[in-house]
Amino acid sequence: MFFEEWELITEPSLLNPLPLINLSGMATKDDDKVFKRDLIEQEFNKAYYKRYDEECEQDRIHDIRPPEVPPPNLEDPKVFREVFEKNNAHLGLYCTEYVRETLLELLDETCEIRGLNINSELENWKQRIEYVGQLIEEIANPYTKRRVKDKYVLLLSQARKVPNERAISYGVFTRQAG
Image (tube, rainbow, N blue to C red; front, top):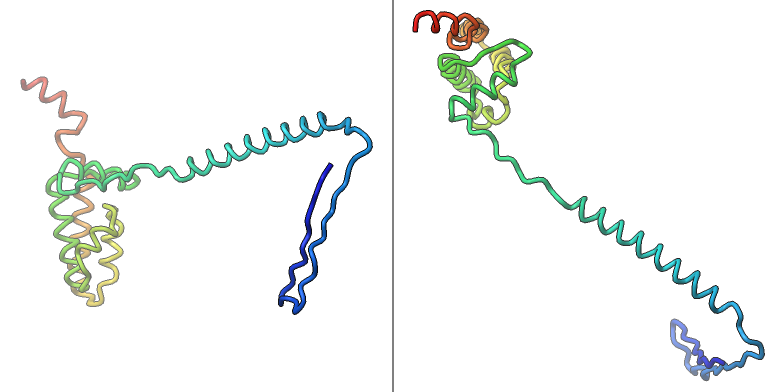
């Protein structure tokens, strides 16, 4: 058995609203499919909520951000050496205190000549020595460019030398001497 009431709503509203329509009805035969419909609805709800839970889980996983790794402290000579040697491994370069100081002086001088902000260039160069070479190549004055490039080439030759304390023979000689 059922009862329903229907109302017609229009836009714009009618000048004379229509009366409500009342519907009612009564079944004369028993519904033998109620159990099957309920079972289908339960299975559908279970699959729906399982899918909903999976999507929520994916959304939560997607929203997880890894913690931000602070940039390396390049003021520390040991950290500077590790980053420099890793980023220039393809060139076989080593970082000593002399190389570090000379490189920073060369970068500072190049930025001053070109009128660049040293702090922004320190962020851009990522300890790749080729970046300094590119900055030098963009110097307009050919004589200044040649002078700075000579310093750069000398720096490269010093950076290619294996530091004494990391040479293979260093351990042998120190054991024999000590």
